[in-house]
Length: 556
Image (cartoon, rainbow, N blue to C red; front, side, top):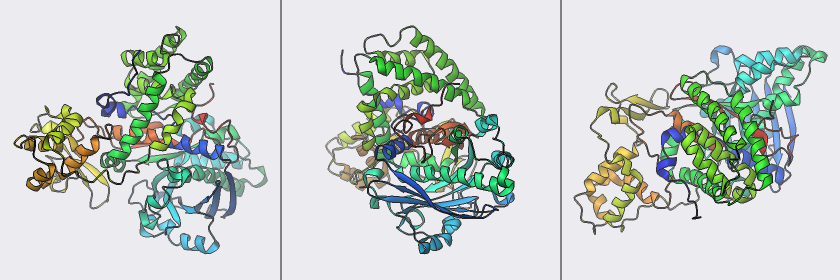
């Protein structure tokens, strides 16, 4: 049998498929928990100075083989009318920073004057990330009340929401004065993408559990109880993500390519296995049943996701019948499963199975996690000596699908991306109904590539890119992206990001799936709520036995 190649970018990079992605063993959260277990990290809570009203600060320290990182958490008494998930909010229920090392009392005092202010404050290079979170109004009071009376919270309500607090931003990479990415990128524990942010969220979840139990004790005294471990583990950290995350994928083509390329290479490696080992089959079938439980717990109030969940549940039934019928007994069984799924299942089901086949094969694919960061500082340097003929071929390779699009048709360019002056948030507006075109952001690479390609038609194939750009400097960003595509084939979304039909939540879903998020719950086509670390062991429970597959709940 010929070697099975990675799936083609024209298949993988369509928005509908990106919007059907699921977490996998290469997801950033799971890379972190595996590492912390493997390296025997230790955890402590040296400070918990919070009063009966839930106001104060705490410090949570994670000690790795060479370095320590500390979450410094500030808890606030926030009036309900001030609670907002908007980026422009000025007050939150809790604010945090991830400190590089173990903070002194002077550090905490300095941070107390700045971290609660978020954008209005400033931190230093000793801080790696800054974040904030709000309580879930639906669950917080229920938890405090139940625990204070010696009772456990209602499990159905936990399943409905899934978290007690949700972050509204986790900033890193130089934001508000924090350390630049380059300052920590050479550390082994930080080489995979977003490891500092994932560590911050992991420690925040510990703080949230401690805080709700503390407030229950303050109310109920001796009759108060702590959360049952199983119930506590079901709680993740929520996140509200809006349009700000969508431009990130367009603006970081090399990084996005590395994420997708690693996953596609992992899928291809497994598909190329000629047989399925009995242990691998057993583990896969167990995790398949657990994945069914995870899907069964998935709740959404949005019509689009409700339909996708209905399709996914049907997909799981079809896949179960296929597996029961000996689907993994064929030659190259994992490949047979993927090929069958492409004919029989929705994209949600296809991508779930593509993630699941990686699970029994950590020894084969886990090394790819180290390749998911972007260390190529020269990728954005334009090669001026490149012949125009090569440039045209590169544009056609990534945007051939777009060359037949009628860009004069209003439906194909109905939207425009811009940044709201009032809210300082990315927006997607109606080009022909709002006066926003002069402020448009360069987030329509397909349209721009077609314009460059049209201008290239008049140029001799032996002319250079430098010659072309001297005459057409407006195409510099397209030329750069085209040249990047030569080594980053998965860097471009193969869909129109400004059409009347574009669904920005597809981009949000893709990025969050690589983080390791679950329970995607769109609230519109432009923002989504998710859960992070739901089912994960807390630091005092972390072990080799539970560091990896925590995302899959026990079958019930």
